[in-house]
Length: 86
Image (tube, rainbow, N blue to C red; front, side, top):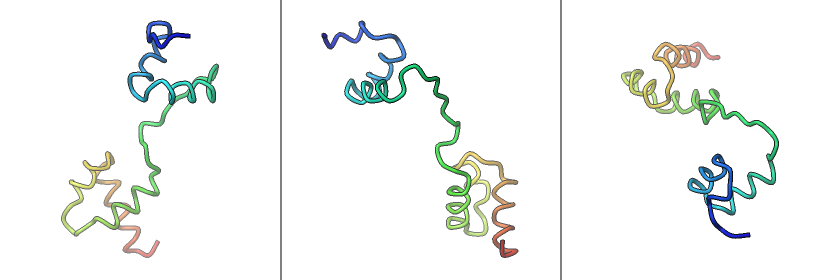
């Protein structure tokens, strides 16, 4: 087979452009025929909660909310829970 990207279906051409042919073939081998959907958030909320708690300085709720893609209310709830001991 040739390495001509035009011989691949469009989604695979996009993957080849993104991660290269070798990784694309591994992904194809593992998941061909299946429909995949990727969660909007890369990290678990428990991981982000831990990061927010570690990075909170008493004044940066808005910054943390923006940085991690959660609402200020969510960030405040997590901080409040830690202060309550739970």
